[in-house]
View: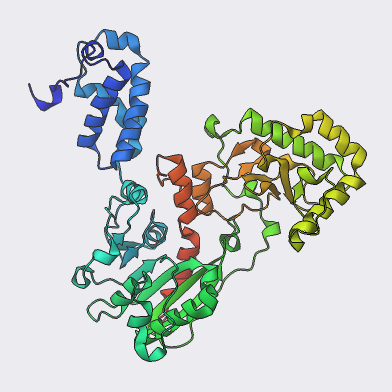
Amino acid sequence: MNSKDKEYKIRHNLQETEKVSIEDAIYKVALDYLSKKTKKSIATKEFYARRYASFFSKNKKSLKEKSCIKEQDFSGINTLFPELFTTPFPQPKKPTFTFIDLFSGIGGFHQAMHQLNGKCLLSSEIDSWAVDTYLDNYGIDSAKDITKIKDEEFPKHDVLCGGFPCQAFSKAGKQLGFADQTKGTLFFQIVRILKNKRIRPNYIILENVRNLLSHDNGNTWKVIQDTLNEVGYNFKEIIMSPHQLGVPQLRERVYILGVRKELYDGELKFTVPHVKKETLDIYKAGIIDENPDPKYKISKHEEKVLNCWDEFYNGIKETVIGFPIWFSEFRATYDTSDLPDWKAEFCNKNRKLYSNNKEFIDSWIEKWDNLNDFTPTERKFEWQAGESIKSLWEGFIQFRPSGIRVKRPDSFPALVAIVQIPIIGKYKRRLTPREAARLQSFPDEFMPNVNDHQAYKQFGNAVNVNCVKFLAEQLFQYGKGGK
């Protein structure tokens, strides 16, 4: 029997001998098949094996005619899921530069460098879920702890990329030097590469939260500046958000762009567009999925809660509300003098709102049964859309610990390691992972993690691809006679 006709051990009577369903039996065979045929992560193989088993087992008539399951029975999986058998973003055959990708996550830097025809020589990440996503898309194992990579193991490269974690640095005096001030932080891992004479990349592209510049009363940024100067790099910090490139997401980050002083020691200048977020339109920006999975629809209870608050907003006299609505304060009479000033102010504003709209609010409360089946957070409401929309369903909505928040639909709130996934009111559903990918400028060929929770988290943590690419193209002109 040749390998093509190889019979798998799992037969239909496995249901009787091992007490598993036909679907579970097929899952095991499909997983074995994928393990031999594809280089994707284990989690991805398991996810697709289960999808295929569910699809295959529904054809029970065909299954009953088989005495066993053969390898050729799984040829259809190649047609159903072709993405399993290719690397979406392989290394370029003729790269024009090389780079390393530190704290690489799911490869936002990698994606930008790939689009500029760069070849990745090393990537480093300790989150196993992110490692899976990186492998699925780039065919590279990034499971390397940077703190355990020896100096001699770093390859010589042209560009160092990294979205390093922000940590407090030592307040030690300048006389102790960068090594003492940054030791114990992950920024030190970047420093040891930059000061290594064998490696010394021509360019550095780093990214962090905007607050890096004020972190630890400015001490963190001062140490970074002093360090980069001391190790011989000319650099410029740029604050930028994707909305400046027409991507409807407000997400300001600081980018640190540097070049070796031997290549260029003049002033670094970068052009960044000035775009008003009010001019953006998320429905025309190529972000929205046309046929999303129904699983992203909001629940009946959530729809009820939102209908309730939509009716509230349209029933009160005020159209602009500059404070959070707290249902518990509408009929409250207790003394607020012992509360913190900010809280007492909100309580009093809520009571005044109730007084101004007493007749309507009383009937609203009665209609909605005193909001008895709402959670404490569902009894709070934040209208942050001004007068730009007339209904909650026209905006973006989040169920937050502070209450239900409504924002205007010109741009999405910043994707972070998402906890409260935005709801697109117009469609009564949550943002999909693919839409989150587009907001971070990842192309549609990119494979999100098969676990939705992880996918949202990963895109929230990722660097915006278009921002990196836009700034990198300008940076690479320095030292090449272009500037």
